[in-house]
Image (spheres, rainbow, N blue to C red):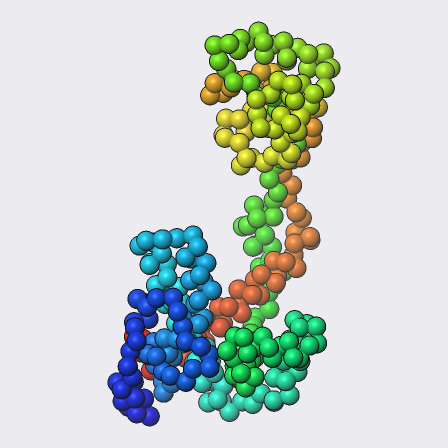
Length: 322
């Protein structure tokens, strides 16, 4: 069978290499084989199949990248898509090999759910959308069948997953406590005045004195600050330890809430700070995140088992990428 496929492949007119081809793909209605991207046992994955899968990713890359970086990223995306298609093909072949069955009514039920949830129950709108995409109902039905098979096979691999013990959850929590700890933050206002030949320290001292005497910080910020926040009364909102540079962060987080700071000079700017509120770093207790950690560890175990299974399928399969 493989030799037959290889003979057929040799007769295919390659329209362009997978990794060097431009962003374009054949309509899903096309029956023309445009080129072979890979052979998986006795089945072919075409270049157009890969392009169809990767097209949205390529479009996004082209909006933000150019030149050699774009070329490299497109090649990387196409190769990743091809590998995913190979794995998908292996799963579908294993489903058939085991002679499993997917009752047709499951597929039809899923289609009806899609029509109801995504098209408001309008079947004609659903069919019009398929037609605009160049996909027939039978083709869509086959794709939905394959998607459901792959999902079912993935879920089946996790049925014998080992239980996640409370001890394992606790160990993970202790080792990753930073993930469950919020950043300390402050609700900050500031007045910033550029230090120039015409701006004396006495001028800034006068503003500072008014604040110490009880003048409204937001009013003086609107009058004197040269920071973009002046129209907001110097309000920077909530600020964490990553918002300002290291020196200003150290200064701001050392200031007492509800108190006007002293005058600080940094990089040719005079600063006066006021903290409306301060919130310390808070670590969520284990009881609050236990179920989240358990689900995360279960997902990791499912992925590990699935990866091991896919690797075993690859090891016993004939796979050729072009």
